[in-house]
Amino acid sequence: MKRVMAAVLAGVMAFSLTACGGGAAKDAGSGEAAEGKGEKTYKVALMADGAGFGSQSFNDVALEGLEKAKADFGIELTTLEVKEVADFANSLRSLAQQGCDLIITPSSTIKDAVTEVAAEYPDTFFGLLDVQVEGVQNVVSSSYREHEAAFLLGALGGYLTKTNKIGFIGGVSGVIQDRFQYGYMAGAWYSNQDVKVTSSYTGSFSDVGKGKEIATMMFSDGCDYVAPSAGACNLGVFQASKEAGADKWSFGAANGQFNQMPDKIVASQVKRVDNVAYSMVEKMVNGTLKGEKSEYGLKDGGVDLMYSTEDAMKDIVPQDIKDKVEEIKKQIVDGTIKVPATQDDYNAYVK
Image (tube, rainbow, N blue to C red):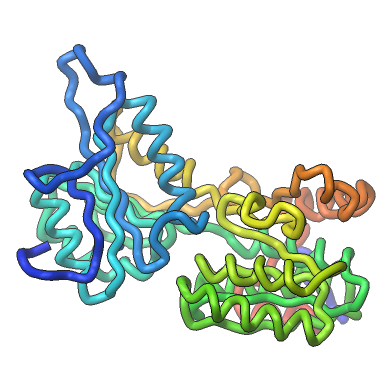
């Protein structure tokens, strides 16, 4: 084999709204930084899709970054959950009409609505944390080299497995999920060419039960490590690992998710959308925010691998394996390892 080194108009709508202004507004208020100084208090909204808040998905990671920005810059921070795709555009319009200076969404599913509404409100900035958009001067967009962190996680799984069977569970198939899946598979192949990776998709980022169902099947089939990248569905995977018993483990995502199942989540591939959201606010306050696109990977800390710090988990990953994974990381950063991001790239990689 050859290894290539390498997001409301009046009416009843199916979402919960915390608006930027108006009589029905419920917001988090502004911090102390702007009080008493006569400075502009910027209004920022975070709009999440069906996964919502509270599951430690990327929505929560973004919220962490904006809470920090609120403390540092005195912004008015509000949140909005929109369950239905058909409501995305009007929800964005409502926020813009109510005076938000910056509307951020962590979800790539809101991309089309953002592009549409941004053209109608050129004085409002829109931030996309998980997908790139070109040619719209008031849209700030970001993407990530998710496959790089997924490669590390897959390599870890390949090193750790005792059954030579590990699993991957995605949400809704697409470009970003491809990066997770094929990066993970390639990393597993890199560290253990005898390993079999079983991959499946929930078709959702919010169906916890489906995540649990698929993971239970994988564990029953012999997988001893399962890596989810499926929003709130991840919670079901963690539950399945708990019920599967001894020697059945989960990996995590988003901000680590370790506290969701402290005795079962060994390591996590993380995507630092919190830092990117914070940076958008910082640039807005400083007057340097502009429509542009950026990409983040291992080299600049946009993605990474985290290990559990729970005492009960420290012996699961021996130091020599951590050292091997760290060396792989260095080779990805310096370009020695070229990580596949698509199925075609993966197929070429493992030839």
